[in-house]
Image (tube, rainbow, N blue to C red; front, side):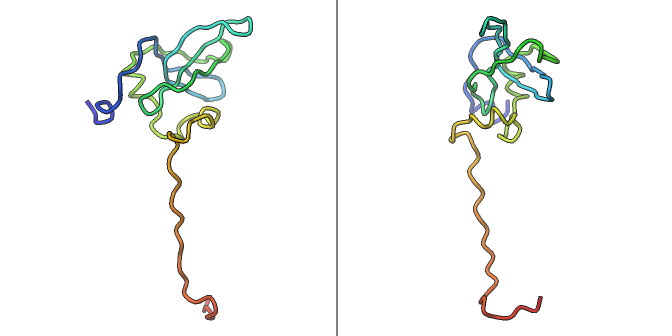
Length: 118
């Protein structure tokens, strides 16, 4: 068992899958069929950093591939870094789940009044 798996809480019960959507997007998480807006939709709660994010809804016509799997497999395959999430999901992440900004590197070139040879 990896250190990450030891530190994360178990995922809640439910059906898990790797979902490939048109537009080259892959979501991994807990899935359910729900009815919204008068039509059946796929609800995916993506896994990120060992927890489920708020649900994302997709119409059935946008599903390119659907691979059922266990919660453990889903957790192993889920994105580990924020940049691996689709942009729309990354935009909704709470600040606590976003990476801290890189410190600004300041380069001291000495006295600005000196002439530089370049």
